[in-house]
Length: 297
Image 1: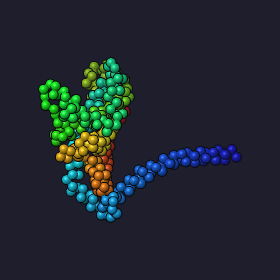
Image 2: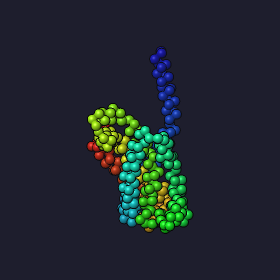
Image 3: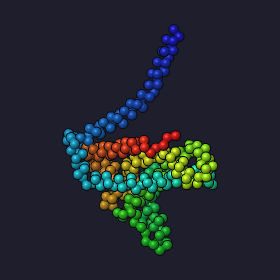
Image 4: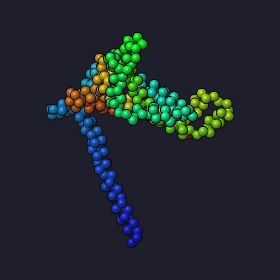
């Protein structure tokens, strides 16, 4: 009799648990998986939002790879990733190594470098657009004060992408720094003490102890940086609108242009799925490489 009551009570608690998480799971399925499947189906149609859709098969995928703007966005996205990730990863690691020592005001510097991560990217872009302004921005005023000509940051083909890369690295460096800092603090102190007994230099300890034991953390920050970089949109939208001469147009900005501004849902869905496949392939390749270079304790 007692076991029957216990089973009934366990079943009742389980049902209540499922009832509590049910709405969340339902919303997740509807707005994630159903939406994902719907976008895949839409990518095979020629659908202007104001007109009925009709099936065209792989035509959208063929057309976007013949579209100079999409190919330009693909190239610019690759350029942005290859420019921003090495710089961001390197600076984040250097900062983490410095802030892992007993320097003065260590906690203050950690907070200062992490603050941009807590700020909305659009707000950051708006502020930096003012800073970059060649007429009345702080940089322009300073250059004029010392007798130099203002630099055209955002409307110069050669400077625009670098300007966005600089802001992105500055805004995101704190996140990677904190992750790396956590990884550094998980490395047992005994390894360094043993190296000191053997007379190892600080540089030798970094290359022979710190970096090998930090590789799982470095791999995580690399994966997240790649995914975020391939989805770059906010900075481009606020700062340059893809210009000048499409030199900062990215894939996500192209998806926005075709899907939101021009209302061609089929084309934009196909472009979004191409981006999804690219992210998935790069992630799988990185996980494959991980088995060879990531050291696990």
